Image 1 (cartoon, one colour):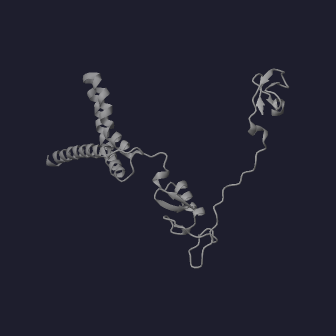
Image 2 (cartoon, rainbow, N blue to C red):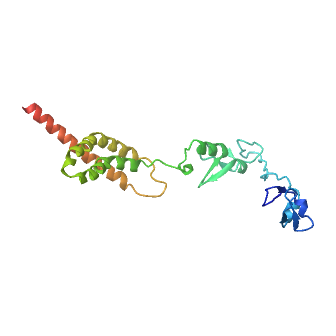
Length: 212
């Protein structure tokens, strides 16, 4: 079908069978079109390509999913014998189509991931959160001392959280773009320093209380 540029009517290709020039049957606007040979040919039903069947010889392993085919690979995920028609190469491994669908559907293989939670960024952001809040408050001058006390006190919660996130992020895959563990290391160091400072402060406060 050819669409008229004026009214949008779909002009039958037969209008331009003998000439490039024609008119829209609805609005009678002159239209020019060039018909490609493929437009005059009826589409042929295409059948999916079939892999040739190779019946197994006596004593040879057969495909688990199609016993009339000779097994050519072993699924590296579940271990069954599969033929070329029922296997796919994934990296350096061969997996059966069922396991490939399972790995893709349940995301058990990191190579199927399209997004990833960056736990190292979360850990570092949690460790730096009290300091990031304090920096703009310093612009308020001496009056900011009262307000700075709140994010500093909040670090008693964010520091253990950042430490937990750092330990959790250490064994988790990082960004899909290759990078090192610097963020996790910095988050671990900062959270340990904050936890140590709070531990020393609490110990000193309790010592003063019991020594009186």
